[in-house]
Image (tube, rainbow, N blue to C red; front, side, top):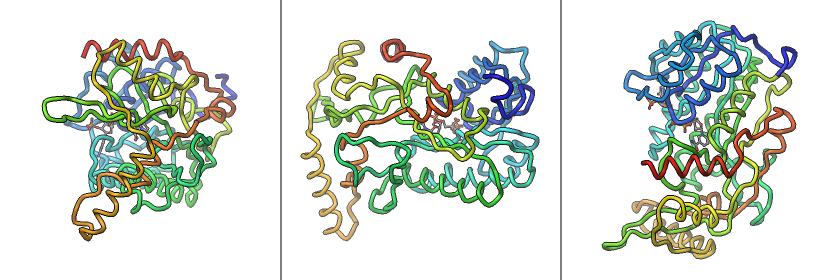
Amino acid sequence: MSVNDRIIDFSDKILITGSNGFIGPRLVKTLLDYGYYNLKCSVRSTSDLTALRSVISCHSSKNVQMCTGDLLSQQDCDRLVEGVRVIYHLAAAMRDTSFESSYINNVETTRNILNAVIKYKSLRRFVNMSSLRVYSNINLERGALLDESCDIEADLDGRSDAYCTAKVMQEELVTEVCNSNNLSCVTLRPGIVYGPGNKGLHRMVGRMKEIGPWSVFIHLGGQNVLPLSYVDNCTEAIALAGVKKGVDGEIFNVVDDDLPTSQCFLRLYKQNVRDFLSINIPYRMFYIFSYLCENISKLSNNKLPLPFNRKKCSAAWKGNIYSNEKLKNLLCWEPKVCFVDALKNYFDYQKAG
Ligand SMILES: NC(=O)c1ccc[n+]([C@@H]2O[C@H](COP(=O)([O-])OP(=O)(O)OC[C@H]3O[C@@H](n4cnc5c(N)ncnc54)[C@H](OP(=O)(O)O)[C@@H]3O)[C@@H](O)[C@H]2O)c1
């Protein structure tokens, strides 16, 4: 990228929150490879720093600081944000399914970071990591294109998905604060980010269930296209979103080229990692099951937990197609790792684990 295409200099300070997570260390590596050397990596005192340390140690000449802090503390956020020109806000509660924890670690943390941004006024751009999960496909036909123009989930209670709720609220907060303070923000909505470092098959493919003495994989994805984004391709998009001129206020879905169907992915996984028994559950059957779940929950006056509902079922398994056209056109992004190589790296990691 030429100097005229960049909004900051290589020496400008960049903050990466959630820098030790699955995506964070790869983003740090990508930014260092691009030439940005003044990085602040936010970590918690309890964080596992193995992957981040290994990236930083390979670039020992660069000015990379690991800064300990909890984004739930306003004081810590103020300290982290001071003097920073770009923030890549990756920190999130990804694995916790409780509404409370999701809200606190996605929305409250974001509010604290934005409060600090307003205080210091040095920021050139805020990159907000969201997710493809914020969309509602309830009004889309099966097989229709789900792109950046599609509706965001409006019925959060009906969807009853802690992560989706938190990410929608996080996006709303960022838009409101950035608009009212004239701040530049770019939002990224990746699909399933995969690669060495994450274990097992994603829930959009299906779930392993113990039935008596047997482990059976309930395959829910059928012929649906999986919105995969290989981790190194995803970090390339994230890095560009923070420094490229002319994309202020834009939203990008992040998926790779050559997306496989769930069935194809499962078959390749079985061939290359390990074989197991799987049962294919058609979408319409699971949709009816979700409807029954809703009614049973209603009959119990919502005392019985609601494991599935039609909105959740539709969002995960109705089957839409995805596009990375906007990413290519505006960010000049191209996937660096092709599907075949990405799969090989992912499968090698699964086999080794
Ligand atoms: N992975 C995917 O498939 C995917 C798909 C779409 C979007 N995304 C988004 O991409 C971003 C990065 O995802 P990821 O897979 O790298 O997530 P991850 O591996 O779960 O990492 C999350 C990071 O956030 C940090 N964090 C959480 N709460 C915090 C707090 N209160 N204060 C400071 N740090 C906190 C965690 O620190 P600890 O290590 O100390 O817990 C960790 O470093 C997230 O915003 C996620 O929503 C991911």
